[in-house]
Image (cartoon, rainbow, N blue to C red; front, side, top):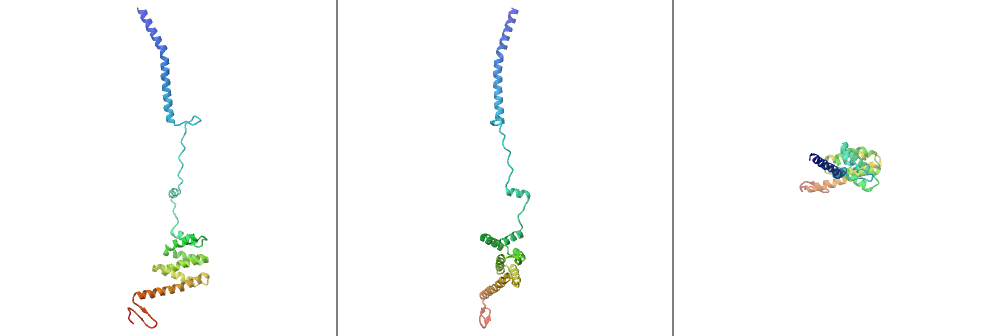
Length: 204
């Protein structure tokens, strides 16, 4: 009985050993495929060469405004800007000339020192536009700017140049305009100007 029992146990163990490897191999194969699938999902799509596709690195920003801001660069100062507009008064492009003239008109007090410096050496075309601008400023309601513009015009009128002649004509025209304005202003205050008598408030 003891030998028979031992033999039975040995046969059962042998059968167990013979049947165990296939099931273990199947299980190991399933586990291996699952591991491969998981690693594939983590590594991303595969390229034709069998290597995972690596995304390209981000490109650095090339925006001009951002680059200028990072460098701390600033635009030109107001005098530099106004000087550049004075240079554009002699541009062959009509639009550029008119736009530059309009921009200079926005800064009457700031542009006067630049006109004083550039006018003697400017061309006839540019100088003519500067004299036109001086005339507008001289006839404006800004007393300080008007006085300074009139001084520049009178100084230019004393020169024996083509610009000096233009300035002399401008000064004469301004005198007529100012006389008309003064007469109109006095009339608004009740003054009467005639050939013989002059009075205020209608009194002669």
